[in-house]
Image (cartoon, rainbow, N blue to C red; front, top):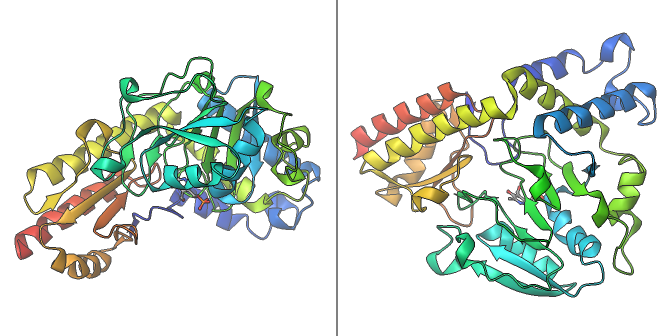
Amino acid sequence: IFNFCAGPATLPTAVLERAGGELADWHGTGMSIMEMSHRSKEFVGVAEKAEQDLRDLMGIPDNYKVLFMQGGASSQFTMIPMNLLRGGSKADYINTGQWSTKAIKEAKRFCEVNVAASTEGNNFTSAPSQAELNLSPDAAYVHYTPNETIGGVEFDYVPDTGDVPLVADYSSSILSEAIDVSKFGLIYAGAQKNIGPAGLCVVIVREDLLGNTIEGTPTMFDYKVAADNGSMYNTPPTYSWYLAGLVFEWLKEQGGVEAMAELNRRKAEKLYGFIDTNDFYANPVAKNNRSRMNVPFTLADAGLDKTFLAESEQAGLMNLAGHRSVGGMRASIYNAVPEDGVDALIAFMADFAKRHG
Ligand code: PLP
């Protein structure tokens, strides 16, 4: 089968097979990695290797900390203002969809939010250009969502925010292409798309932004506490961290993010190319902002949605329903979805349109 779920998403088969093989007996120790102390030399080795592999893959500069945190990406919506306001009272947010909207809602508990640009007016079917950003000079940081998972809207550039730290929710597009980490103050990503199991959240943060939380910040929400303790102030989600490490190793074997970018470009071009040339299907997103990871599409007759989903599942093409808030269809084609999967989906869609169109 091919799994097009938006998250938790498909993992590389090779990773699952390897994890399965060492589930009960990790490297001849007679124990599962999830049964070991997080302070054991075995687990610390796994944890450090995962961090180093991620640093290698993304070219993370030495003046950035990599944190393996809990509570998913949603907890970051709260931690970011708590840690990054640093005495300021205002932050800029760019609103391109449901995830940006949720981040804004949380930030409003802590500070004045200037919505520097919003594409709500066109039902979140594009991202604003740099010229359209109304950035405030006194913002403590600028937050945006490079890839909106639900609407399938992706920025085709990294906003220039001058000296104001740029904060990015890379949950659904991290590791899908090379990015220049030095352009960001903070990058965060829930793991359950391109990294590993849900719950874990990777945070990459510039060191100079640490250590100035607002009063009342819980210990577990303080990035400096996490950084000073190697993300082990408490018991970390060890098994998720280990699995993330296996995914990073797999990515390196595939040729790293450059190879992924090329593969992802091909997959997305094929699928959008098919949708655009077939009258039966449509995608509403501005062409330069179409997500390479999440491809929402509608059928000419929404009355056929249920049939489409039932038949696609029978054909082994799983989880193609759009987000519950928008309906329609969505094919998420993250790193671990092979090109064969996209080919199979296109063949099914063509056949379905012929039979029902
Ligand atoms: N941000 C984006 C872009 C997402 O796609 C998601 C959804 O998974 C989240 C945030 C929320 O992540 P979590 O469910 O890990 O809190």
